[in-house]
Length: 274
Image (tube, rainbow, N blue to C red; front, side):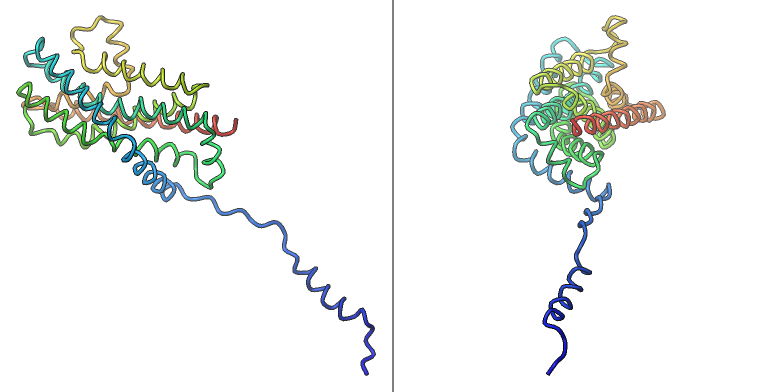
């Protein structure tokens, strides 16, 4: 017969159980920027494809209509190039600035930022992914507007490949501005108003020829992020474009885009912790 006390087996079992008692579960590692950016971009692009196609049609129709109206007062030359370039970039402004400001304003008001804040996703990935999706969604309308305007005003089509640089750079600058407006606005109605005002500024300051603007208005035009994309596209319509100047305009547009996206990321961090 065993001489072990009756409580020994219980103690033998209880001892290892106490030793193996787990502590607090470690948090999941934070996602890296590029994979998180790709995931947010694909999700936002899928969402935009379903809900924004009618609005993209409206933006394209609006830009083409503006060019048809301006055809009655502008015959050609530098003014025609400015009208076509400004109308093409206006499609980007309508989607990337106006709609993105509304989206982030509604996201903040509806508590959607709380959902993103619980995910191990860098704030920059959320802002860049949404901005990239909205900007790339404008490509068909921008190309269609530029081609239609070139045919309408008799401009050369050979250098329209410059849109491959104008659309992403202008889109980044305007999307960053739109995201910042939506995230900083205290109410979604104010975000919608600011987005509409930004798009109106892109319409008035981008489509109208700069030579016909008063001095203070021309200075305000220089502060608009999309102005340098408009200038680059307008110069590309020349028979012999000054490519160094075009490259300088695109570089400035890209620098403004980086600044606006950094500001939008800061605005996202600020709104997410409130």
